[in-house]
Length: 452
Ligand code: NDP
Image (cartoon, rainbow, N blue to C red; front, side):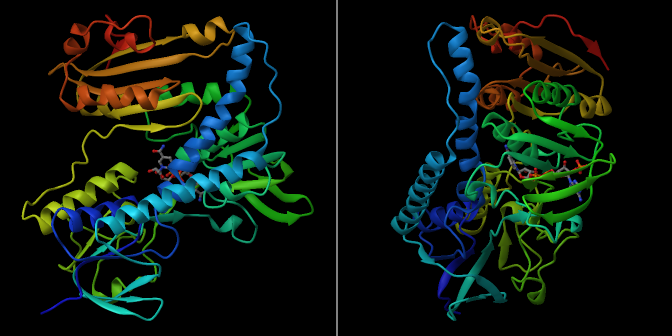
């Protein structure tokens, strides 16, 4: 049978765009791609990229103070959102255009429309066009989940936070995951009075306990009003904001409320179940190791599959899909030992097992250092950094590396290479320290602080 396309990709985020480009430019496939919103997806348009630019903006508050402590005659004024916001918009438009240009250069046909699956080889676009394709790739990402308690109030999610007209005087952030903690730090740094509610006992569930505690302490020291074991009971819209009743018996009006309570796979209304694609309990598209769904011609990658929800992972899944389907080289995306960072202030860089998870698995040694780094110590700040290695007693391999420090995201990328290669503690020890740096602690920790 003749198809209109060899591949039709639904969703122009990081994963879908990469798969489309590689299939077209490297495998010579005829590729179409539909995107209903803006090219670039969550990461570029309303996620990692604008978030990181806000992290940079926010970091200047401390930098001005430190500069004064180092002898510079600087006076920080207030942060002006009305200067930053148009520049942010312009940068996102620039990046979006690069995505479009690169797709077009690779020969991919772009459709600015919503696509749904009509049958295992047919997509229907919201502009009325219908196309057949030998393979369909679903790369529609995720969307913020807001619990029912907030459903009737104009709360923000990470979708809206970059589009605020002005910064609020105060904000309540609900959640204790990546997004909640990152925005608590960003907005606090930009001068907003931040209250954060997390329902559990400690933020950043799933990460190393000591790292979580370290970050929480630092966030509080920096001025975030962090309330653990606290959740919202009731919300009403009032003049000047949203009145919030919480489980600690308090009631207060916040100018803005940001919900960061997780994300759901974006699989609704795509026609997937109707054609026989199996969805999981959260609506995630169920796939095998090669990203193939229960319908052989339909594949799915990225957050819509709810495996490891990170941009670089979606990109890897997209490339592995093209290798498998278009290059005759069956390739499973590797989900093991993925380094990642949480852009709180200070940042968390992490790879491998937490101390708790490793100890469940086998006998371990824990090497850890917590200290005041020279740059901020000199400026009179009390900031502490933490470096931690989890080592297998049996194989001596480093099972986990956790860094809480400025630029920990940059550091873990490099430490991650060693851990991914299977480096032992002795390999770390053999490496000469780079002095004076914070990360030299990673190669100079001689005695375990504990075994487990
Ligand atoms: P997370 O899953 O990280 O965190 C969700 C948070 O919301 C948790 O603290 C959770 O609590 C809480 N929560 C969930 N449901 C409710 C509820 N009904 N009421 C109150 N609290 C609730 O999601 P995020 O939205 O922060 O981020 C989504 C994903 O995006 C991440 O998992 C990550 O993969 C990705 N991301 C990655 C970033 C990075 O790499 N730096 C940055 C931002 C996002 P509990 O712990 O009790 O379940």
